[in-house]
Image (cartoon, rainbow, N blue to C red; front, top):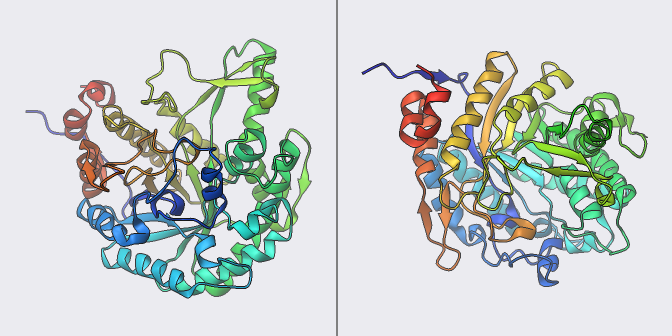
Length: 445
């Protein structure tokens, strides 16, 4: 028998999964997403979700620890911690302390996200991130959380996917915004500018309280290619879509100027304020000029028909996009540590996930070998959770979830990821066992 080939990752590499409060906690009834669900804008309602607020985080962290994960990214819920503008809930903070403590006791390093798409209703009714008045409010909330959790947490994500929060709400209409009239790219850019200011305020607050902290944010990065690179309108639409979706936050943090298709906004106080960049990568879009799609600046984003699709065709398996994303980040921010804060695929049958996981991690390893400073990988997600406007129609978990009984269902990818985490690497034997269909291409010969 030939020896197994193994690709290893750097010593101390973080291996974990990512979750978000509203998606896993359940009974989250005081935020904008709960109201959005009640108004009928989502496929289903979150209900108990994964019942983490009821204590099932403990069994899920047991599963993570037993499968050799050494890190976990989770978010805290602003609406629980500050249910009203003049009220803090110390019991909610203590629950989050218990979660962070429970993770460290299991050998799992917690990474905490302060804002993952949800806003307290009292803030939402004031139109939240559209008004610069949100910035000191977010700073005050940040200080409260960091003081409570600093004993256990040193890695902080200020804001998750600010570009998706703004564009999905104000442009696409899939996420809640405070009034129907508050729509359009201009409103999205106002929200993004205030999120940048909020990130800067939180960054300084966290470092004041915890000088050793590592503070960043999680960017949904979407590589794009023109459908017909030789056709100027396709190339123009690709460039407009790419910059409109990807570059506002990164440009501001690298230069102090938020760049967008509608013009630039100077926010000099945010320049350089990140200790690492978090990258959420899922797939690559093909972009075509389309006069019938003014909502997206006359560009249509899609996947080629012959793509390796996820269950609902929400994601196409395009592994090289992971390397391209890390290469872009390394070029944009030389020497800045990079962390893959989300990567995964919706796949209830677990037929695509093993090869998706293996192929994407091979691209991460490739980036490491080009000396890109990649420090960790968080798989989305640990267990099936409530996927925002799409409800329970998509299953991203290593473990499946029976929503009615709360039973966890072990998928084969659990064991693949466990072997990867234990080895701190990926071997040809693992691929041959869990994703034999790509074994020859990943480990030729």
